[in-house]
Amino acid sequence: MITEVTAKELNTESFINEKVKEIKETVGNSKAINALSGGVDSSTVTMLGHRALGKQLRTVFIENGLMREGEPEQVVDFFRELGVTVEVVDAREDFFAALKGITDPEEKREAITQTFYKEVFGRIVKESNAKYLLQGTILTDVDETVAGIKRQHNVFEQLGIDPQDTFGYQIIEPLIQLRKDGVRRVGKALGLPAELFERIPFPGPALSARVIGKVTPERIETVRKATVIVEQMLKDSGAFQYLAILHEDRVTGMREGRRDFGQQIEVRCWDSVDARTATPTRLSFDTLERLAEEITRNVPGVVSVTYNIATKPPSTIEAI
Amino acid sequence: MITEVTAKELNTESFINEKVKEIKETVGNSKAINALSGGVDSSTVTMLGHRALGKQLRTVFIENGLMREGEPEQVVDFFRELGVTVEVVDAREDFFAALKGITDPEEKREAITQTFYKEVFGRIVKESNAKYLLQGTILTDVDETVAGIKRQHNVFEQLGIDPQDTFGYQIIEPLIQLRKDGVRRVGKALGLPAELFERIPFPGPALSARVIGKVTPERIETVRKATVIVEQMLKDSGAFQYLAILHEDRVTGMREGRRDFGQQIEVRCWDSVDARTATPTRLSFDTLERLAEEITRNVPGVVSVTYNIATKPPSTIEAI
Image 1: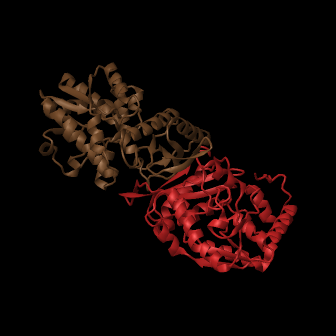
Image 2: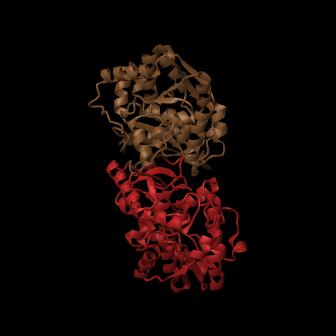
Image 3: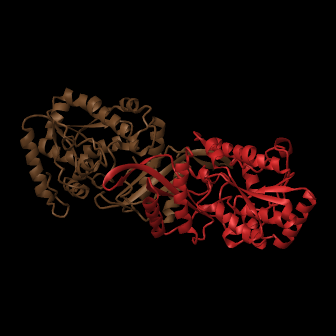
């Protein structure tokens, strides 16, 4: 049983001291490793681990080809500023090869999880001789995994999988009592720049979770371009999360007076405190129309843009 | 070359007199036939034809299984009130058989067109000995067919097909100089009830044009249920047209705390004068959220609802 620490009751200073002490005691003189995605959870864990372990912690950023525009460079730069060295591993070919031909979202997640853990990160971990793995699992991940809503790749223990048997290392999850709002407070207290600790949530499978149907470099590039526009236009909206989804369904459009059977982007923008429930942000129609205009003008092949109007539940925040 | 008559310059009384005279002169003592869909175009043509020809005109309503809730009964009732007898032909099996396994929108339209003309209506026409066929083609259909945006099934002549060679009858198109707003004025002047002449446009392939991907009786029933909700909730919106589209893409939702991989309905609601260009109606978020709530609550299998925010162009009014 995990005891929740709410953002309200959280004392960030004593939380950080306690977790740093725990990590130090657990790892001792061994080596630890962690994978940084650039999301608020893994960024906060990286800072906690860095504070506890310094050079005993090796932090890798796996470039899976599914990240947002300029993301790998940005994340590495942010951490360099904070004195943390991040190692970038180019694994784009591994991921696209694993995703080839897969359309089912569960199989996609599975392919990414397997490629990430067993092939890419698993290999790095084994070669590194690190015995401890730091993970940014939060309480919402545990809840949703237990409820069967989501398959999180970082909650082996809750799924009854022993990571020491399966992958040969031990997992440390210092954020597991927190929800997203608590993690943000801890990240801020650890000195993460606003761009990182205030970052909107981004899913583990990255842009492949934003593509319905087949994942190819071309389709990822399409949703990447739409994501740049959505994130740029909505960054000051005050929303909890905003995202662009590339649909597989084709719809009719017109270009230069002629029929063009093209693609559709769905925009979702959510008001939420902790992602457990959420409602669509009431953006102005000026903003909505500008979003559609920018996307159809600048993203090749897209002729239609929709905005999500369903709440969670019965919807979920991400589409797949 | 067709000379446009704009709604502004249209004198409905003299237009009706002229068209009634033309139809009378063309048909003489022969018989004419027309297919009534219940849309404003075919309803107006039915009234023009009835006024010109009385019992010399036979009007059939083909029940293709793709109509909206209660539509066949409603249309027949409206015309009975106006003294016009409409013959209902049950051809549901023909249409679903022709649509089986087809996902490409062009092939769908083609299957419906072929089933309608060659099989069902073609057979009726041939058996009827009618020499003349009244059609509700309007100028926008001609424009869009010429531009290649849309394949209208009722503009043979503009496509260079001679209907006398192909189907053995001659087409009379009394509305071809008008656009939608002009047709509404003529329909009103001919005594059509507000429910009919003010009806929002509805596509030829009916609900099959509102289903992306495979057309089955189940999927038609899903979009039919969503259509009832959308039309009921938006009928007083003042919009030009509003519609529900069932997507083929599946998205994640949650029901009773568990993951539910379900269907998505897209709502479109348009402001437009003549359908050539259109912008999404700026509905209130109260209305949008209520739409989503009603649809996800009352349409089995639907977990997500979106609202179109792109303009035409580059979008089109219908999705397929």
